[in-house]
Length: 112
Length: 114
Image (cartoon, rainbow over all chains, first blue to last red; front, side, top):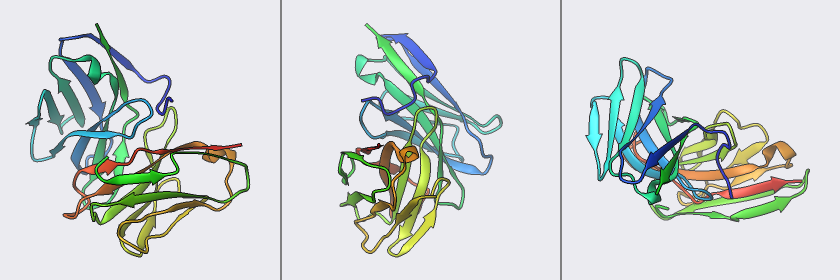
């Protein structure tokens, strides 16, 4: 069943192309950021994280970029596959707190 | 799901009844969280715990209570369920080294209050 917003912004990409998903975070005191993937009916799945002392971090097929000047995060997925279809959202942790703030997400659709 | 289980996975209940959602972890993580997820909103924090017997309120805590008597369990109670509490509930844990670390989620509980 659908567990996330029905009217999320949607990014449609062709299989094999690269995807870029963006996130604007809210608090300039945030110093740790996570990207999550959520498939329908499942819990959010950790993809990659980045700390504020870095601008870029790479994982397997994914790269996260952090621009602190404009409070912007992006997630790049290389060679997008059908299994990448999901909702992606970012989370920020405010320095010195236990709390995380979550974005509402972007739906990624991979076209065959 | 990083050693986190939630139960039940689905529940339908009536307005005014008490409901307890359970979260159990096998990772020995210090920090545990309860969120609700609704269309049009990001995950919203209900309550969190930073250790045994240490809990605090999140942004949407009204109508919910929690307890943490053991590291591995963090139950969420709706004392008297209302239709506005129909939602998907997620439990999450974060690592031993402090809150500024990966936060992992359970599979969720879909609660419907009629």
